[in-house]
Length: 600
Image (tube, rainbow, N blue to C red; front, side):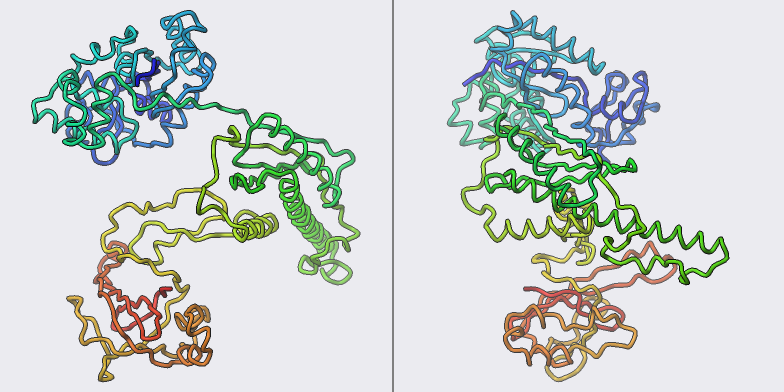
């Protein structure tokens, strides 16, 4: 299968995006460096001998005036969006294969504009006029032929892609990759083909397809398909939809939640009808309000529980009412507190003592309806915006493993709490990279889809092996670890236990120890402890638990560079299982044992 495909290619896009973001002049040789090697090179740097794959020192030795810019995939994708938008002014719907490379079916677009050459001219003009970037446009049968044609600005005749590709080297396969991981795999395949004597795409395409699959696997089959001028699939055209917005001016200004919610209901019904009429859905709903003093209040909600009533008018109304309730209540209390503070300052300036006939900000009641001397906060405008709009059938729900009724009720409860206390008031814990169990905990607002500060897929030498503990104590609990004879167990400098473990007992808390760390690990979470309350209490008050097995110890050296001049502090971690079914993570440091976490 082959599809007549047009490719829009912006040369050296990672370098172009990095230079644009950092405002580097175009007459300066530049390259993108990912911390290990050069990944993209500008034309000026390439003319001076800089090549992809070079180390930093080697590249700067070849070109001393070379400017090295950091690699940033998010930046490349963000700055490439104007190029895709400019192309969509000529062709409705494109596929972004990777930042710097666009795919689109050529059949209908070329007929509409008269010819494939005319289509290429219009795209080049539109991109240059909207973004100022130069691009190459090529058309051919198949992805690889179209990509290579775009690099030379050629149009390959229908049915001639195999002949066009035959003379090219197999190294050209890397230009059809869509990500760095795929590029590494294709580079390894190209190296293997070179060692086997297959140096051109024509020689590789002449091999029988079953033999290629048997010898080179899935990646080899993909490369063989492209080398023959075929496609695995046609371009997946995106259909960008504009954000939908409805708004209403509130005249007179509204200061009651029920009145504002009534106006929000009309907007919710109007927005829902607009979504249904356009057969689209949205991933996020933005609620915005303007107060009578000009303050803009904006909150964005997730609505990506497709197929479970997430975009019903009643559901949108609930979200608006919850949000308005939180805004009006919080704003009224804040206004009352500011008003009371002003009164107190005026009384102090007049020589009177605050609190005697005056007011103290601590006396502000929770119910602001009793504050007759404080003007209520009023809303003058309400706006609803549907964000991340997409066709209604673009994302189907899961056949198995989708959200249950309990999940949806939990989501609504969390959304209700978040609307009252704010986005940062409801937090969830996620796993991030790190060596210590505490370093691996990342807390973020519920519903936020952000990457953790420390990636999980990094090596992290010294990291504890899986499984990760289910409960990490806020404050470690001191414990006493003894062997079967009742002698204390220690860990020596080489990471060896002085004796096999026998029992673990929670020590009495010190007077200065926080109360959060005084609960025995596993006492409240262990199933048997929950059924046998006396046993749990005994463990919490110092009862010894019999050890049935352990793993470790694993040694971890703290950040020795943060305290120079002192010997590094070495901690030993031990995973311990008990006869009652519980398991904990113990830490030995400076001759003392503590419990850091518990396992379910």
